[in-house]
Structures are given as C-alpha cells and as structure tokens.
Picture 1: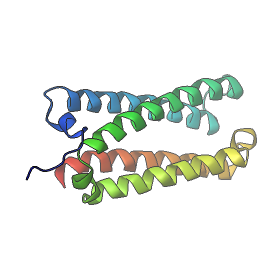
Picture 2: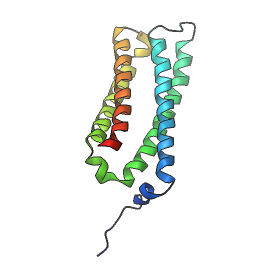
Picture 3: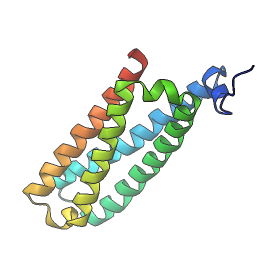
Picture 4: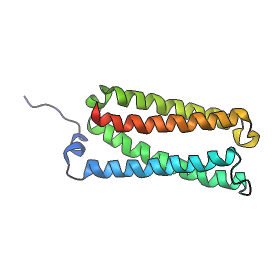
Length: 145
C-alpha cells in the first residue's frame, strides 16, 4: 500500500523550490519589519519634518505587501511539511507571536495610535518591534528543533 502524500510535499525536496520560498520569506520580512521600524521611529519623534500621514501610507502599504509575501511563502512552506512543523515548538510559538503582533497592530490602529502619538502608542510600537523580532528568532530556531 502506498502512502498518500500532499501535492505540496514535492516543495520540500525540489532542488530550488523550498530555497526560493525561503528567499521570498526573507524579502517579505525585510519589507514588513523595515517599514514598521521606520514608522515606529517617527512615532517616537524621530524625523519630525516627515509628514506622519504620508509616511504612514507609504510604510504601512509596504509592510502589508511584505506581510502578504511572508504569509504566501510561509503557507507554501508549511504545506510542504505540516506534520513536522506542527510538532515543532519553535513553529507553534512563532505562530502565536504572529497572532499577538496582529492583535497589537489592530489595537494600535483601532485606538488611533497614529493620531495620538501618546505613551500608549509608543509602548505599542516597542511591543510590536519586540514581537516581530521574537517571530524572526523563532523562525530561525525552527530548523534546529
């Protein structure tokens, strides 16, 4: 009897498919995190000459594009080996941290953090950066768990 395998299982063994997805994932992370850091620094008062609304439109658009690339490449990598990843503590922690980062972002924007630029907004930007850095660290640990 032959085992039924996922059509995505070939991604993990293809000579360039999985590495290409990893590259796309890293590019997405750079777009996401780099633009968030630029915007968060502006929330903290750096570069006050830059209009916040225009910077936010640019940075948030690029961050969302980066997140889309991360999500798409991540889903394909996950689909190639779901059992192994679900059993990996670093992966499950990473997914929990991504969810917390999303909740933090939703709370930041729902309370008008970009209009207020108050202590709570600054605290949320620190939390955002910490969560995303922890996501990246967990992502690297996946290979070693």
